[in-house]
Amino acid sequence: MQASPSPKAYTEVEPHGASPKVCQLCRKCHTDALKRRCNLSSVALCAGTTHLNTDFQLECTLRETLSFSGVGLHSGAPANLRLVPAPAGSGIVFRRSDLDNYEIPAIGRNVAKVSYATSLMRQGVLISTTEHLLSALIGLGVDNVICEIDNLEVPILDGSSQPYVSAIQMAGLRQQRRKREYLRILKPVEVREGEGPGSKFIGVYPGPGYAIDYTIDFPAPIGQDRFTGDLETGAYADLIAPARTFGFREDEARLRDMGLIRGASEASAIIIGSGRIQNGPLRFPDEFVRHKVLDLIGDLALAGRRLWGSVVAHRAGHAMHTALVQRLLRDRSAWELATMPIPKTVATPARAPQATRRPAWVAA
Image (tube, rainbow, N blue to C red; front, side):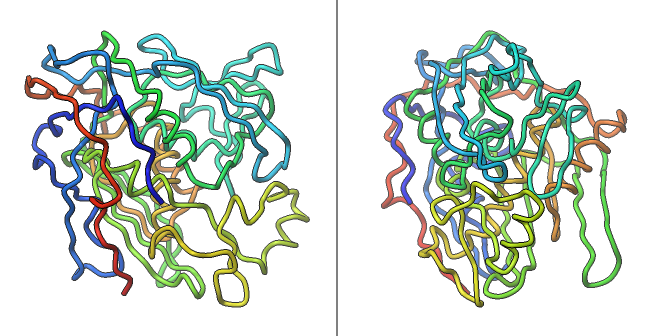
């Protein structure tokens, strides 16, 4: 699947310490022995300026309001969503337009029930299934936005974050006069569940960029898989956003009895049944693990700022992702707020990455 071209794209210098124009997200997939690199450049969506006249990365918001409509994955309820530009320092805030514009900031202390999706709640007001939207916003560097919605669940759309990403790319971002603060990791923080082969684990560690190493282990035909990469390379739109959510046909009746997946369809999820994919083809040979990375980025957005460090996860999920956020935020010695310097440079208009520049992915 191709990412929508962005006519307003500009080239940008890579984050401090990174190798220029090297896409580390192109490392790996089914085996550590398979290492590929592509020539995708880091693309800045912040238009409206032809040079970076600051020593630090700045916050961004949307250049215009964007609208989406669809049904919730679990509730099946129709919802209309508007992404509205917000002032610098606002962060990402959900607004229930059907409940007197009640606002719920997308931060760790508002995390509610977490099982098959991530939900936020404040004073009894709920926003459900936030992870795909939050992933798109963090993945593209949107710091400040009002997510205005007229129902309790964010629409699932095609089951990925691609629809949000495509719309944001076409609209572009507006740079704001405030330094972007990162949550820089100072020491390891880990969450573990169980012992032995069936154990689960997630941890965050000091390091440059926003490195992710994610391993999954599901029944056939998914099996074990691993993806490693760095969000700071700017390749989120091409390599993570198109990856869709997935589910097993054998679980359908049980989940519906629990009041879940009432909005699921073959148009919004990869369906697996009788040991095969029922509504292929896949967008990537390793689409399943890429979607888990997509979910992880969205859930860790609830730290309130983009991370600067390294995340390792093994058989984790929404509950462990958000447990890591809460444990991290409770330990004030484990992180600091930091602005990240960038070299001064003159930016020139650049073509958006084309499909022919995508690396050839090979299944093991």
